[in-house]
Structure formats: structure tokens, C-alpha cells
Amino acid sequence: MAHSEYLLVQTSSGPVLGFQDTYPTSDRSTASLVASGKLGPQSPINKWLGIPYAQAGRWKRPTPPKTWKDPLVCHEFGPYFPQPPDPAFTIYTGHPGLYSRDWRVQSEEDGFNLNVFLTDGVKPNDKVPVLVNEQFYYYY
Image (cartoon, rainbow, N blue to C red; front, side, top):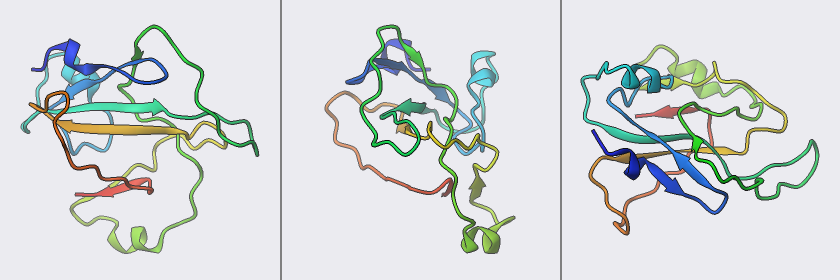
């Protein structure tokens, strides 16, 4: 298991605390399972879920989020903005590799958050690939 100091990361808005997950393809957060000592079958992945990157009132331009001093526990997926139905989702529903996140809370204003996934063993200043996905589901 990774040491908690590696999972506490300083952002421009404040510190965020992630967790190490051995259920990396689960469609929901498994932070509570991992915390209770129930380790999954996969190699560990470090996760920071629901990190706020902006804030905005309805129909307002986004601005940086309010800063915080205490570590923000980032163990759960954040809300997402309403999305129109995706025809590809209908086609691939039930197929292996499609993990729907449609159980998450939709929000008109609070969807400005992101999730970070990092393999175990990456050190500060290591160069790593970045994948940005703008949908509410992911293909593995």
C-alpha cells in the first residue's frame, strides 16, 4: 500500500487526499472497501475523485473554486452536468468494458470536478501520459 503522504497532494486551491484502490475498474468508489482492509484482485491504482477545479452559479462564467486549508478527502466521484443521451451508450450497454457512471448525481452547477488516476510507483516529476474524457462513461 502507498503511504498516505504520497496520496496527499497540494493543488492550487488546497490539499487533496486520495486513496489506493485495488478495484480499479469498479463503477463506484471502493474507498470504504479498501479502508476496511478488503483488497481487490488488481494491482493498486491511486485515485483522487471529485477534485473541484471551478465553481459557477447557474448561467454564470466559471471561476476558480474557493481555496481550502484542510485536506479535502477525494474518495467519491463528484456530480456531473446533465448530458444528452448518447446513441453509442445504447449500442454498447451490457458489453464488457463499458462502465456507466449514470448513477452519479447530476447537477446544474456543481459539475466542475475531475478525477485523477495514477498507477502506483509514479514519483514526483515523472512524466506520465494524460487522457481526458468528456463523457460520463469510460471504455477500458
